[in-house]
Image 1 (cartoon, rainbow, N blue to C red):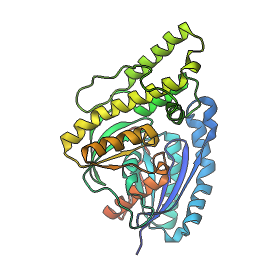
Image 2 (tube, one colour):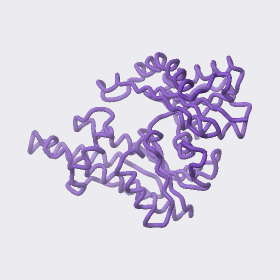
Image 3 (spheres, rainbow, N blue to C red):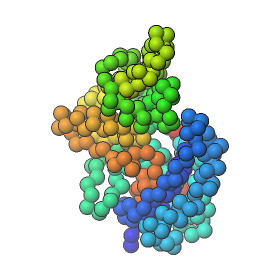
Length: 339
């Protein structure tokens, strides 16, 4: 009998539902919230209200596109955290209620584990997926981590940011440049037009495999301040070069820890995941890094880099194989990463 998983994702500002049948995606519906653009960032209260409006039609559309009826579902997987509590509550409550009504298991999923396991979402049954163990560079808005993935249920964080994450550096620097939210894609677009060596920004000197991006942000702000003193149009005049140099520096910081992580773990496969893995510069740099070292690179389709329910469904699929009874329904959502 096929395993049919409905995944529900509502950790931030995208409401998403996806149906996977035996690990093969049948649908992946995402409703994005444009309301936050005017504020330059996600407004939690507005996000949770939008999730309430979107959750029913998004789930209905995911089932329709998949050609699956509710009675066919084996389980409902949902993001329990980390994320915005108000947003999580909408998805968690809906998923639990649906599971209880259908008398099927509800399976909680760690949002970050979903990003790591997004490489196992298959478009066809024959599609290749990573072999364990592999190293995953997880780069998203609030997290930058190096994870040794030994199995779907065994992931060891061997390096992480001690302050800001790569995604925050992209978005916050983009904001002070006057670029729309989210700023990362705009930095990526402008970087293709600029000189990555035009400006030099500070790089951290952190021991081990941990990251830091706060110094880079401060250095970027100082560059803007000094430039504006000399020329009121400094940002507009040098926008492409600033973007290219910022992106180049962030990529150098990320790769600086990737090399020793590969050596330390001895892995032969490297994956990237999270929203920043949609960045063209990051994708190309990791691909080159692996090619020069004879490693297998796993670069996810852009559809599975940002927050989406397909990654939640595949994580739920693996959890269901381990525990068909599902999760404890009394467990509440959580906002921060649980160690």
